[in-house]
Image (cartoon, rainbow, N blue to C red):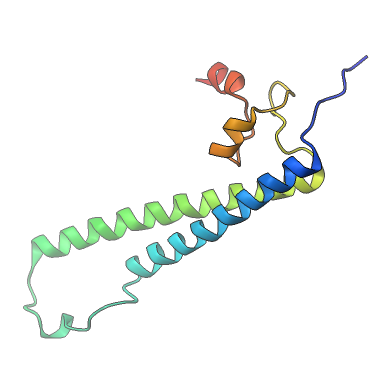
Length: 126
């Protein structure tokens, strides 16, 4: 006979939901900043008056743009993971390790609210 999986209370889940919603809000703002920076939305408009050949600055700008694109993609994944955590709260699987089936420690979820692995399972992976 299988043991009943211990889950977080409705109050605890509400606390996590509020934490996740706040993190999503902040992450979406960060994402907007990153995407606008690599799309040059806030260009100061002097490109056409500047000297045409600046290889060092051009290379640095390209590297910076690439770094911002990578950070934006990571931010996008983070937002998706947080939204998936909200879905797990709604369907009753939030806070349960997908490997061990045990409750993930509250401290871990406060730090990484989108976690799907307990510390124990994470150590087994690595």
